[in-house]
Amino acid sequence: MTSALQQLLLPAECLLCHALLAERDAGRIVCPVCRHRWRPVRPPWCERCGQPEPHFGPCRLCAGWPAALALVRSAVWLADGAREAVHALKYAGLPRIAEDLADAMVGLLPAPGSPSQSPPLLVPIPLAPKRLRERGYNQSEALARALSRRCSIPMADVLVRSRETATQTALTPATRLANVAGAFRPGHRPGLNLPATSLVLVDDVFTTGATLAEAARALEQAGARTIYGITFGRAVIPDFT
Ligand SMILES: [Zn+2]
Ligand SMILES: [Zn+2]
Image (cartoon, rainbow, N blue to C red):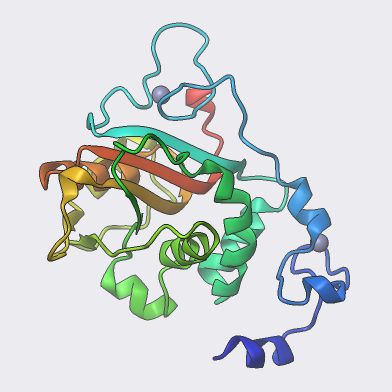
């Protein structure tokens, strides 16, 4: 469906609070008031994984991550309407909401570094083929595409799912790791020099980081040396805060 047609069919009201959208926000799904209610994830945090600092000892969330996964950040806590927004992106057939979510993520992109730094590439976390068929689109790709338009960093499907995995939602942190083990492999990208490219993995939600770590592991094995991860939401896990 074209976005013009979608706009005709969808009521011009905020998905979350149902307030009528101002004319300048007509292309939006979520109104500015609701977007401002999303609570940014802020320091103090673990410099590497962006999780709030543990009370003592080193961070155990990112201790086992592959070395190439240098930095992971999330835009907002998965609460205060942000959860509903992600739900709409994933389950309500509203890929256009990715535009609203991407606005909150722009500040997470790695700053353009020294001239010696490798050019970055946005890499969406791929969806299992079965889920892609059911949903009709990959929500991480919708986010990466919206981000790519905002920051002029190209997007590429560098990763593919090598097998189906059970949905992570109902799993504990330990079983999440086992669930995604070996789930990804690098796709065939002729001409792409992985060691000389900074890869920015894009996903909708960070819970334990198991998915990002596994995706980074596959890319590292294929030669990638610098990998970042950014997500819109970060779930609160009591064990780790
Ligand atoms: Zn609203
Ligand atoms: Zn950490």
